[in-house]
Image (cartoon, rainbow, N blue to C red):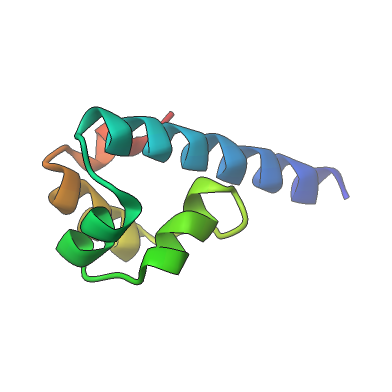
Length: 74
């Protein structure tokens, strides 16, 4: 159970950080999703901490935001 809570906490923290970076970039969820070639609802799930992301997805999101993958990490 503890490992699950840790993952959930990290997933939520990642999502909050992504939302901050997206807003700093002046992008809506729809715009970020389009640039990253992802669905808007998927971006929403990530930002709410309800969906974990793969490294491939992180690379797409980082590219869409114009930042390094490292910058995505909270």
